[in-house]
Structure formats: C-alpha cells, structure tokens
Length: 225
Image 1 (tube, rainbow, N blue to C red):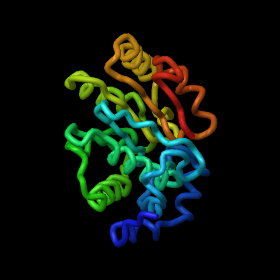
Image 2 (image 1 turned 90 degrees about the horizontal axis):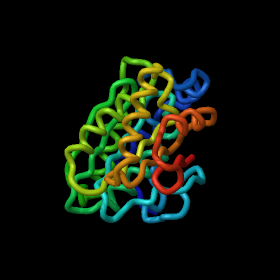
Image 3 (image 1 turned 90 degrees about the vertical axis):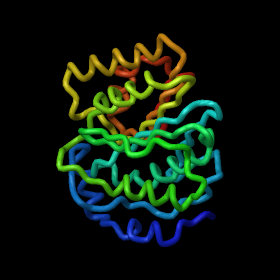
C-alpha cells in the first residue's frame, strides 16, 4: 500500500457532517470544509478503484487534461478523485505537460507542466486543489469545456480529457447546453480528442450528460461511477 504521510494528514480530519449536508443539499452546496480524502490504496492497480468503479484507461501517447470538481457536494468523492488523478499523473507521457483544472461555477487551470516524478509533490498539489472552496454555488460544465477547448486548439497531437464531478450541470442555462453540444460535436468531427471520460457522476445526472456530449459513446466518451 502506498501512503503519502504528513501531506495527507490534515485532509483525513475533514468534517463528515459537512459532507453529509452536501449530499442532502445537492450539487449547489458550498462551504469551507476540507475534502474527506484518505491515503491512496495501491496506486499501481489498474482494475478497480476505491468505491468499486473502473479506473480511467490512460493513453500512453495522449496529452492528459484533467479537471476536478471542488464544489462541496463533491466532497464524498474527493478521495476517489485524488487517487484517480494520481494514477493519471503516473501514467501520463513523462515529457508532455499534464493540464490540471479545478472547477465549480468558475473553472481555473492550476497546473500545466510535465508530471512531477515525486509522488509526494503530486499529492501536495492535489491536496491544494481539492481544498479550494469557492464563494459561488454549483458547477458549470460548459464553462469548463470552453476553457479546455481553448487549450485543445493550442495543442498538437492527440489529447485525452477526464472530468471528475458528481454532476456539473445544475448551473447551466439552455444556452450553456447548446454551447456544450457545439464544442463536443466539433471534437467528434475530428480525431484530436481521443476520449472524454466523466468520472463520479451522481445518479440522476448521467442522462442529461449523455444528451449534452456529442462524442460517440463507448469508444470516445464514457461515464464511470
């Protein structure tokens, strides 16, 4: 078992009460609690992750773009998000940058460098990302897709996009829905975006996301629990 000691300590002490409130109030809950992460289990395992869901299959050639939902409603999933992001960093091409984003209603790029060889540095980076709390309610997937799309257009070669969120659509208008469809339809027309994976989506939200994302399901688009 791989354990990041010290770096993970304060994250293990987060409030389960706030996490429960986040689940009750849905995806629009905000707050100041820290993510309920634990030490990652075997980070080299490629079969099953914490919670029993499948891991993301990381392309050995594609540039990795990874986004993590930092809204309070996603707190119960942050340990899963932590472990999966570490796995992606470990498997990403060592000489190509990994682009890491945090998002709620307003996304932001937080890292754009080749993956650190030091696992403790990756853990520290992810702790900082997952401890971020916004003063804005909810999440907006389209705002994130706009930011990622700009980066994709500036890159040469194949890319793989992984978005970790419990939902991501509750702050979206009909105009946002249409824009998300246009962006992903453009990705579907080309071959640069090899795959888009949504991980951690809560029950009741997967149907809407399948309507929005225009990439072919299965080979180039998947939702993992």
